[in-house]
Amino acid sequence: MIGPQDVRAAAALIEGVAERTPVQRSRALSQLVGADVWLKCENLQRAGSFKIRGAYTRMVRLTEAEKAHGVVAASAGNHAQGVALAAGLLGLDAVIFMPVDAALPKVAATRGYGARVELVGTSVDEALVAARAHADRTGSVLIHPFDHPDVGAGQGTVALEVLEQVPDVGTIVVPVGGGGLAAGIAAALADRPDVRVVGVQAARAASYPVSLAAGRPVPATELRTMADGIAVGMPGAVPFEVLARHQVPVRTVSEEDLSRALLLVAERAKLVVEPSGAAAVAAVMADPTGIADDGRPVVCVLSGGNVDPIVLLRVIRHGLASAGRYLQLHVVVEDTPGALAELLREVAAMGGNVMHVSHLRTGGDLGFSDVAIDLQIETKGPEHCGTVLTGLRAAGYRLSSS
Image: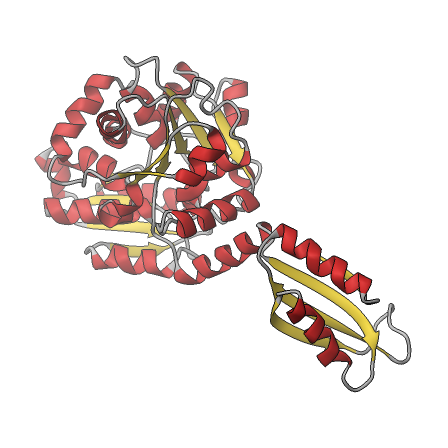
């Protein structure tokens, strides 16, 4: 339903509208994979994600009669901003339905581009039901986030840029929600069988692996992930057909994988991405086997950078803990003057930085004269965590860790 010629036509339409985003080599990921790994920075795209590509392609092709009725969309944030920006550029009225818990910066940005935002439901799927109902009532055109050939063709323009920027690319790793981006990239590469596409979903919102195995779209069994940008309950019919036809494999990553990837991109690449935008990097970090068996370059698409600062703070903390940079200790000591000070001196002597301290004087594991001390310690990594634990146990402390 989408071919290379469709993607090339979309590229002509969005020229001067979508940015040609840069690629950046990741030394850390390259060492891990054993081949050059490049980051395609769609987090630096207009409106913060690749979505403007598909939204504009779809909307610029509407008839004048359709444009007169305006457009409606449903999104957790990135598609919302892409549609709102495209509508503003084309002079169209836009109404966007977003889940009630959508990130506040995404809601504010969507409104800032001139769209009217309605908060409905707890997921993109529920917001999409409301958007369809609005389209039926008003005659406005539904701009689906992924289930339309024009949208997929527009998203596929990412691949055309990658082919120019990394001509010898062997694998492109792509975050997958409804599948529009991965399908567009796979379609763009239909006449390049030497370039492989690998999709990535959050394990807690993974509809594609089971769907591809079943040969038909199957709903996800859960939608509980920090990666709200790819938390889609059901594959789209259009992208599913493309991914199935091109036999695109879809890997899954854990929440810990996502947070570690986001932390690596922030620390090593100096780039801000949202959890869904880090999914491709998460897949490479979690299991680099089979990514670049032929030694050719790998491109990870950083699909979006629209992240709530509060969520970013939580994810970074989670990533630090997952990477062994935080150590949680439960230590039982005798409740005597100076006991806490002595414990803190021991930790400091081993280079641990105490971030938080709390006391507990009652509990099933405490004797009459005992006190439990919970510590959160910043460390230099897993090896340093082991050093702190070994040192405290050698000093006679009763402790447990997490």
